[in-house]
Image 1 (cartoon, rainbow over the protein chains, first blue to last red):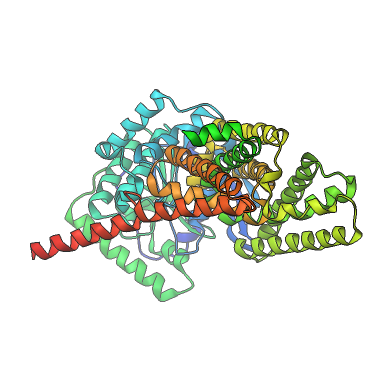
Image 2 (image 1 turned 180 degrees about the horizontal axis):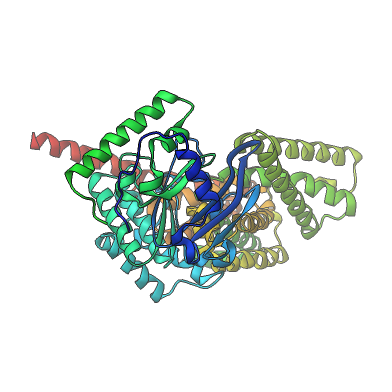
Length: 294
Length: 299
């Protein structure tokens, strides 16, 4: 729950390397308890091209965790491989100390909004109710209890009055909140979200951030694939930098360094620097403006 | 009312109408999922692929009993589905190309076998080509009973797996994350589709079967934004097409039932696309005109 701070952001010769080593081999103090998510040697490939290569990660419980990296870095692939949506070539995934398949009911998943056809003939409430299906299991039918739970979740994202609305009639931001409500209906302890801020308006973005903070305050762990480096330090307290492999993982204040950004967004050096500079400026600005809520 | 009395009195009409209606209900329900899964053409490929199965079953057993031939059809359709899955997974071909290739290969093979059987001149050879476009007039009470049992099984399975089918159709990734295997559900669904095709072969045949799956579903989608209601309306459109087509074909004799069923369904589909309240083209046009008028007034 520490606010993001600018630590030593000057490039040092060992910055990226030590963070990498720390992420891989030294358990963080916060992980003394069972980590929310532990990934070992995860490799995923599309045909012959590896999208995620040999990822080792231990993510502590109770944090808001941002996964950043350039396009095609395997961020979504990583999330999908964790929740069994795409097959792994190698590797193990543990959720709260047990295999994903055993503990999947403690995991809530928010896919990318654009991954489904919103012309599907159903209502917002019905989509949210799908969050209870995992608990119900095969063949058991949705009852009043599930509907009531779903209604409560819709209320929490501020869409109670749109429960009966056909989903194609919702705005992009409302659709995203329906997906979040569906994940809430899963009553999970670990939430994995694939770009929950993609294509939503500023008001929705703010309300989603508040929701995520509420979840953290309730002791939940949230892992978000995030595209916007400018807002990452404000929204998250832990960062994972991914580019096929893990470049860095740690508390925002320690891991969000120019060196790490350069290593993650490397290749096109100028682009990496532009990202980093913009980032630095933004953070400096946000710090001078007001201390972020923590 | 007199239509129904007539349906019950005339033995041939009763069988033809009941058989077509059963087919319409089953294919109407399954078609909804096929269309929403964007797999409209899967049914087309599988039904065409059934033809060589019918021929091989006849060549192996020498029997023309519908149950034997339909079993052959089901095996061939299933084989085609498996080939399709492998082609999509293991080659660079997209699903559309794979569908096209599987459909034409199996169907071509079936036509060759049909010709071979006709040339070799077995006593019973004449009956097989009726599976191309169906020949509902040859349905007897036993056939209808078989169709009813198979169709009943399909409907019960859909009712039991309604929640799972809905989830995997809307959001397969989320379904997988919850532990509902999309592969397993896909196989279930393909099996149900194969059964529906087997039901339809005697009535509308391998060539027109796809229309029975797609038409009622698309028509139903125009009338509702609710999946459950869509299934019901689709089943109704399918049944109405079946009974309507059967009635026209029996009263104006010598007109084939299968194509007439499809034509009636096309009529219902056209009405739905044009006049359904929320989605129909006519009402959309009216709304746009009104909206335009309102804007003019506002300006």
